[in-house]
Image (cartoon, rainbow, N blue to C red):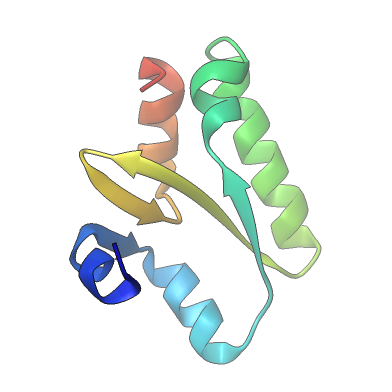
Length: 88
C-alpha cells in the first residue's frame, strides 16, 4: 500500500492536523499499552496522564490506533476511553 492508496483509510484528528499545519511538535504514541498493557481503568488513566505530560511540555500527543477498521492518527477522549474499556 502506498501513501496515496492508504489515505482513504486514515483519519487525522483535527488537533493533530492543526499542529502539523502550524509546525508545532507532535509526539506519536502507540496504543498497545492502552489495549493490552494494563488493566482497566488504570490503562485509560495512564494514557491521559502521558498525554497531559506531553501537552504540558508544549507538544501535541498523537496516539495511533485502528478503531472501527480505520487508522486513527490521534484519538478523541472517547475513542481512547473506549479502547481502554474494551481492549480492542
